[in-house]
Length: 91
Image (cartoon, rainbow, N blue to C red; front, side, top):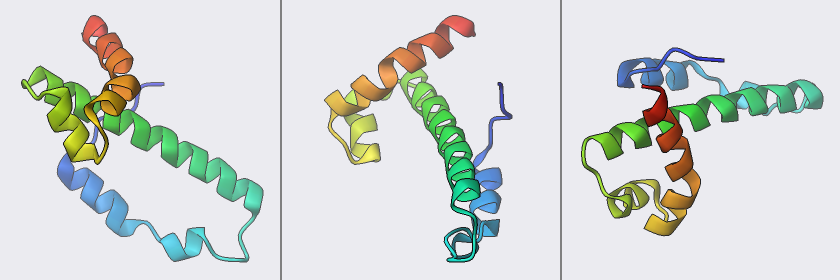
């Protein structure tokens, strides 16, 4: 499934409109919350992959990307290198 790539303004609007208190309230269905959390994680993972790919295409090093993500360059490479290579081969 290909989703629309969000720009900074779209992401800001998306997160500002999200009600974390409602999503974590006691009255919600745990199974529905799990489904929602999985969908949200998949969306965020794709956004991260896209942005890491853009950063690499613009010349950012794995060390810089790791620093921005708060992880080592090795952790950033392990998580994203294969995914960004797949993106590059599709474009």
